[in-house]
Amino acid sequence: MEMTRKRIQIKKIDNISSRQVTFSKRRKGLFKKAQELSTLCDADIALIVFSATSKLFEYASSSMHQVIERRDSHSAMNRLDRPSIELQIENDSNEILRKKVEDKNRELRQMNGEDLQGLTLQELHKLEEHLKRGLINVSKVKDEKLMQEISTLKRKGVELMEENQRLKQVVPSLIHVHRQSSESILSNSSNLPEDGGSDTSLKLGLP
Image (cartoon, rainbow, N blue to C red; front, side):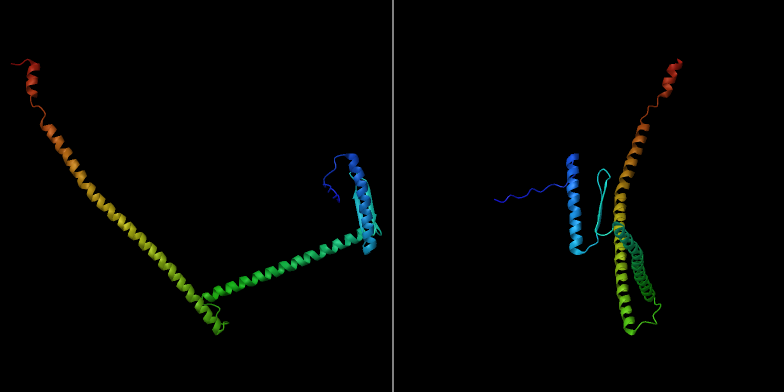
């Protein structure tokens, strides 16, 4: 039975001694692979490695200085090319946007009956049909708004009529209650005793 090789989990090695041994082996293997790639593919390769203790290790297939200079010059060329490309893209985008704005402004002027001289008969007919459809939509919305306002006024009119009927029923009841209260007050005042003179004679001791 063939034994499968256990896959090593890639994470930081906590043990310092094991970490140093692994670093040494992997660095040598990396430099060997770089040398093989340079030989097989005629590639110009440079590697720079700093250990955890800041020790420098480097490999170059030709000259480290020449490879670094080549890399720097290549980066400088990219920095010079990139702004010009980005600027060209930005200019193109601005030109497209400007043209769209001009087209929309011209359409608005034409819908207002302006700037029509350059239009062909077919374009004028198309504009006329567009305006007719727009007018139909405007009239439709206006009619809907008008019907909504009429419906609201009718509803308010019904509510006012109902309130008027309610008041007509409430007012007679209030008048009746007020009348009964007034009659009750008058009845009570007529029943008060009228012998106030006899009491006065008794208090004064008169015959």
